[in-house]
Image (cartoon, each protein chain N blue to C red):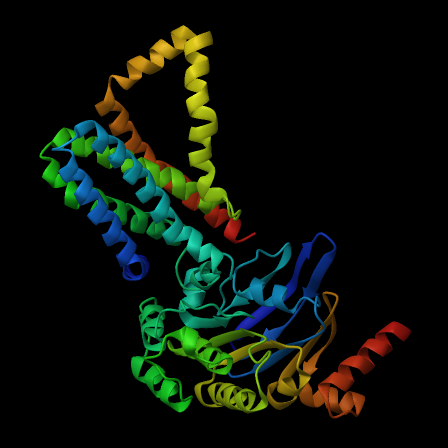
Length: 240
Length: 202
């Protein structure tokens, strides 16, 4: 099967931090949850995948292309949502989406209009008047209006109330199952990953603690929640 | 080209009000040249500096400051093309501010010189903000003028009269200087765009 994402010994280092080497694969329609405490390397991994960073060694391929070399081709087929999405606050939601849509030939205005209505976002209001939850939803619509084959989301539900989180997680689940969009989602709220992730990558201080399908992890540790599994895996690692 | 034009169009729609205000101020100054040529020349120079400085601030610095540059960098546009679009935005605003009122000067030579000076000023103010994230980056060219160029002129005149004479002689070829400034400006923009692109993926 053609993988959407494949990394081989991918690593990136900063002054006192080393991510990887990481070997991961994400298939079409698969949801990979990346979890770990602050400073674990989640954002670094996502920035490597989006081509913001160049790997020190190893490689990452997305749709068979290297993110830091083929940024443009990948971005036309993928969507990215940073941890704190930024907007032009004076613009209305509608004109913001129009601005973003002009970057893509495959932009589907009907789809974004439908999603605005579904998420109950007042599209004629300046973005500065939207609630935090609606801004998060708007950012997700902006990242998905061109029918991406891959969605990279950095803490998309951070700081949102539970009802909005449910809306967003439901939408992401639908994207993966119906549209076969691969999703890489980082979160420190393990509850989100419990509901959503098919496969989980657990990181601590840049190193993989576990990388396996969620179902396999549940069986292996005989625990229901990923957070408990993560703590157990960390403990096991410390003792060995 | 579609993405680049999209960025220029957005810049214009956000900053059309200050552009219009500066253009109106330029109009008034141009009509003042008929009453008091010397006073208006000083005013024209001041407006050119304000336009170059202001448009560099609008087009790039504000994007950095409110972190919307991160949004633009995550879109499908090459970083160097993004920066060049920003230069194009600033240049188009500058050319509009200078030329719409400038045609009423009725002096093609003078208008050419003003255009060259304004474009060069916009380039000088924009480039430090492209290359540096420091909030004071846009002020660098102004401080260079205030702290280095003006005192250097006096120092040269006092201690190196030959060098000062050469500088004064260059000043008597304004068309040549203006043409050089016009040729140099896009070259500086391209180099800054490439340097920015290099840094944006490290």
